[in-house]
Image (cartoon, rainbow, N blue to C red; front, side):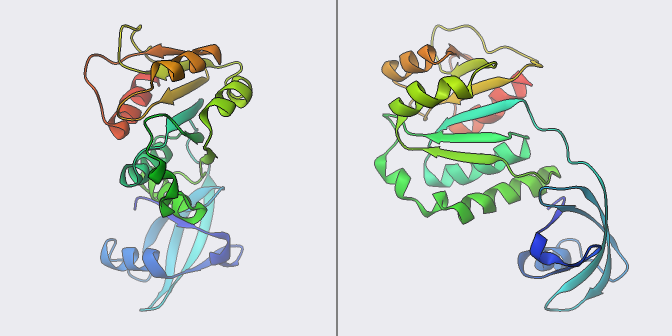
Length: 235
């Protein structure tokens, strides 16, 4: 936890907050914080800064807060992601939040198992938990928007063109396609498929919506690796 994130409910005054639970345990066991110490903090959806530890006991900690720094800028990106298996979904959400992705759209695909959509990790509270972990890692305060689209064809035909308008539309997909571009400074809509890849029908529909296939080479990557590799190359 490189940034202690504060919820609205933590504040007992404009410059005071009281914490417990997981964050208190982290302060005690990892930071080994003591009264008088200064900690890096950020308000979810707001500024970052520092906090002085005023009081610490086994149940809660009281902090005096000073927030004066903006969070880091987000990437100019919409990430369209075929729903990965549940355990990988958690890691991918953390990675997306840590790397500064502002919007993630989870979509269905022919190779996405139906059971994946039943996972409790898609519950809003579970999604938010993973995003928070990513923000804490990267020192950011702004939660990415996560959109769930369970029907691939209606989404790609009816909503994706507007979503991708005025952006460079790309589909990460192995095959005889152009290499993924490097070091962009323009908005991008990027689609990454399941580990087995998009099927040809899906590639065709994505292309009609303005997203053209690009590749990273011959190797087939896990979804979490592909997300990191593509984002690092693009930006």
